[in-house]
Image (cartoon, rainbow, N blue to C red):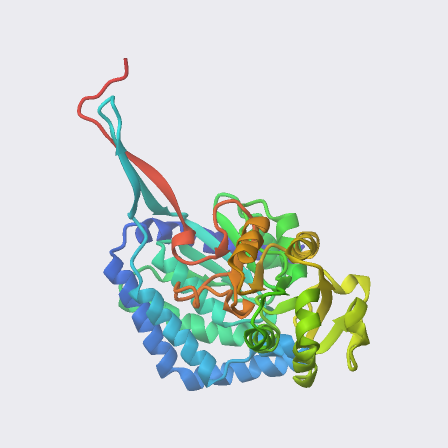
Amino acid sequence: MKDEIEAQALVTQMGEAARIAAIELAQAPAEAKAAALTTAADQIRDRAAEIHAANAKDMEFGRQKGLSDAMLDRLMLDEARLRGIEDGLRAVAAQRDPVGEVVSEWDRPNGLKIRRVRTPIGVIGVIYESRPNVTADAGALALKSGNAVILRGGSESLHSSQAIHACMVEGLRQAKLPESAIQLVPTRDRAAVTSMLQAQGLIDVIIPRGGKGLVGLVQREARVPVFAHLEGICHIYVDADADAEKARKVVLNAKTRRTGICGSAECLLIDRGFYDKNGAAIIDDLLQAGVEVRADGDLAAISGTTLAQPDDFGREFLDMIIAAKLVDGVDEAIGHIRRYGSQHTESILTENDAVADRFFRGLDSAILMRNASTQFADGGEFGMGAEIGIATGKMHARGPVGAEQLTSFKYLVIGDGTIRA
């Protein structure tokens, strides 16, 4: 009970400070926000040794906690990833500022001139696991869109997140923006998560970024709106008219580039016509790369595969494991994905325009691709600089959540002594 009271008091204090900061940010010049992000990027570069030392503490904590290799991979910050954080901050800084952008405008016969313009949401709460880069991504996108943000990182990433957060705060300070615009919950206490989920009137939207357990908890207990995806059960369908070399390259990348991200392919569907013409080359590629292929039906006869169990379909492995089966045509592939997918990302490999169009029209996942790896399901790869997450719901934000998706809108109505009859 004491922990709950202390957590509630902490979140209330942070929320009140964030609401004050949000008022100032909503009116802040685009140049000031960009300058804050550029300075933060400079700080990431200049404090690299400090951040690596903090990350080493987190990696040791994660090992002692028994994190899986995939989760440790999410936690790890090497030089390339730290450079990626820096580059992401600079990319967001360089983007156009969405606040105040006119989405549409029109004149009415009654004499009114109406504009719909983008406006910040207010205060955003982000709850995430393992990946300390979210500290920079979420902070940058919230600031760019004129929102204050309260960040609650995973217990295993606390030191790394604190080191990155310090860089973000220094950027705010030098740009003369409120330092409470980007706040990091300074405790591993899980009671802080509950307090954030119940902070009506202080936090306007919660964005969870993590595994099924975390996201499910947030969706069940949140009393404020949530942008979320429950799982990244991504499918890749190899059509009868796929180019064999393209297919082998794309499937291998979609599964093995990074297995612990939500854009990793978890299920491979191969058209029987493609398999009859090209054999088991794609399966063999995966096996040789060290992937455990849980195969159904005829594919289970391929040497080295493991017989798939019913619960292997519709499962997010986040590991060097993929479920695989043969299907008879695009309609059967669509039916399988509708049944087992999570509406995150699906890819079709085909040279047939009509089949690709049927795939795109038949599915309603947030991201649909053709002849491309599902690993491109990422805001940075979409040109957003960074992302807070991939939203799979259908209300407000959908797909990669960047700065523009963190805005709402308001109507500006201009008259000239206009009255209603």
